View 1 (tube, rainbow, N blue to C red):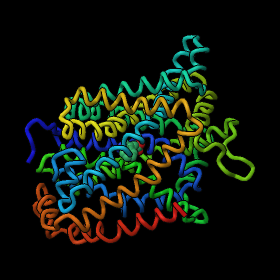
View 2: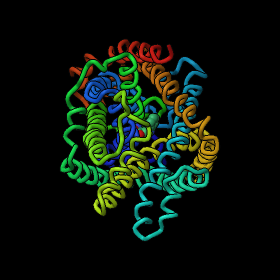
View 3: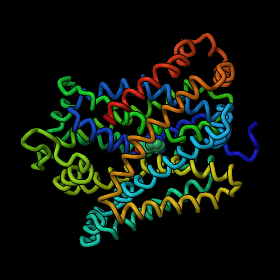
View 4: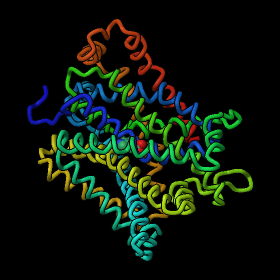
Length: 447
Ligand code: TRP
């Protein structure tokens, strides 16, 4: 079924880094530590780990499998498994594509800020304080310029295709990210105050458990594994048939979770180092102040108290964030680009520029109406669309797709599958447990 002109990942290793690159992003380095810090630390960590294992991982297998079976963009891949309805699959595919584009439109703004924070300390070093200030302070001009810069980076990579763009840059950038991370964690641990943060992170206090904590943990797990918008489906479609999907999915989920965990090891201690250095991080009621700004205010304040080592750390940290964001943003853009390429027969380069351009316009509109649109777009796409589309994917794999075909697809690359524990549990799991769990948690969110 695969047409020869379709790109493929050149190796399983390349795929793992690309899929892990998609998964590892601002959700890990920023979202996870922020959520953990504002949901009481260790208790959130425990629930999050459970959500990744119990809901997100099975759904990751589901999305990858649909994609590899279809060997095409999400619209066509969904059509290939949902055959008894003419409009169901295309409509769902287009909705997923819109969700991916919406997520990218606000993600690029955030990632742009991070670029600003990475460059500012260097400008400061060269005495260009005014320019440095401009880069880190909120203004329309800054937001637009940096969003444009980040969008161009994303377009640049996606334009080159699967093996020469996405895979090549993911394999280059992800190891840099791991090394930078390790250096940062070791350094932060040597700073006074760090151990208090570590304690908050690793010693769970279950008095913080609440329905909203569970809802947040599931949302975070879905976002972090790039589920529910077709990203993993489209990456799955570039997988060769001899790849063992459950095993590969487990590796991708493990890397993603390890990086989120490591980000917590870095940021929660860093908060307390900042506190030790006189930066205010908790209010009198013991709540984190400006939790969303953790990365943009608390960390820079901490770096400032550290002299010249602080400058290096600041640059390193924000470069790390930009890398993480870029390997994620390319996976979002790939969803509509792949759809346009196959369904509208557009050339890859043209499709990337046209769609990247449309999403950039969306980003500009959001940036210019930041107060009213940013949170709204983020909420509609991640709180509503992602779980609902994910729910539809679970129902398709669990109820609509022919069970024998599903088995056959998974058996390629995993001949012993039929007798494995995975196959005894997973199909029922995706059929019953995932939809009920996602629906229940979604209802709690809405009510
Ligand atoms: N998972 C990435 C992160 O943690 C972001 C991401 C990439 C994403 N592709 C996605 C989120 C698709 C939701 C849907 O930052």
